[in-house]
Image 1: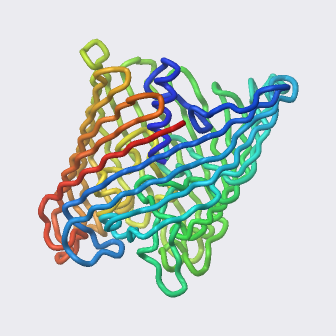
Image 2: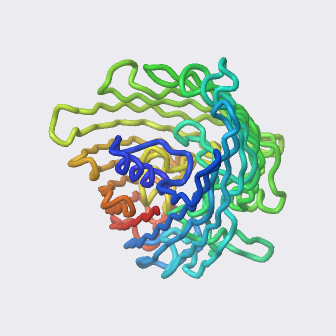
Length: 451
């Protein structure tokens, strides 16, 4: 889901609004028909990235030491539209394809080979919004949608679309994990089948009722359902979510270690806001997870974060500190990139290639960010991973990321990242970095082109 954040920044730039604007459909669509309460748009989004890692990691298919150089890209293209039916409500929907690929050595973690090329259906959904038809629920207070589409709860700590995109590197007889590559870019994000009911407006009490079915074999093709209830007020948003696992694929669940998802019960309590203080940012979530009948034990995860923006200083710098902890058996489900770098991919190297992956660890995080102009932001992130791998410390590490996000034009966003990852142990000593525990220098450059 990473690219959605950058595309939102384009929307903010074009409308001369804030740097991040919330949009639920592809940005900067090209309108081809707008008449008789009907609108039809062509949506095109192209994203490319080039990546370099001085070291490789053995959690996927990599087994030899050395560097890795690879490229990823995808194009998403299709149609979206709406038709008004009185009272301001009406039908909406979208159909589009994604063509994706990975080139070069494949990613540093060994989840792609560099040989992936694939074109598949991505979004294909239809929905209805109530407009002002039900005044007690507010504007568009009832929204019902069905089909292939993304879905997110809160800031993506548990569910941020179905965005895990393995390639063919882990394929084996009877097992095909290939989703078309573009692993970092997360080219494909839609759940295969969904039924989502959104109740309430943008303020006060609201809720999401959802049923989701994944066709992602790296996620064991999990089927799940639940409810997300929120109270949205001036001082922040309070949320309570319940998610129940309904089914998994019996071939891929053992291979991925996700047998416990069948019957799994996950309950989350969260808050995010400023508590009425403009410069303050607060965010926290506590999760309790009861596994299904087939395996596992209860597990918890939680985080607490506080930040402050110095709006009177040049570039309006901000500083954030977060502590997060994940039990050994905690299943992070469909977490993803939501608020920006560091959420919820904690460390570009650790979160994507080296581990831990939001389970079996404690993480101290410090983030600094500044905005030199309306179209440019820069930042630095520090992560300390401890108490990993069942308390052995095999994946303990520290990581620093330095990044920029530059909206060059309405149709081009560029984001470079440089990272330094320092593991305590090499693969030979139980870690994941092949060959040594030397500091890894990592770099990536992403270009996003919405049309």
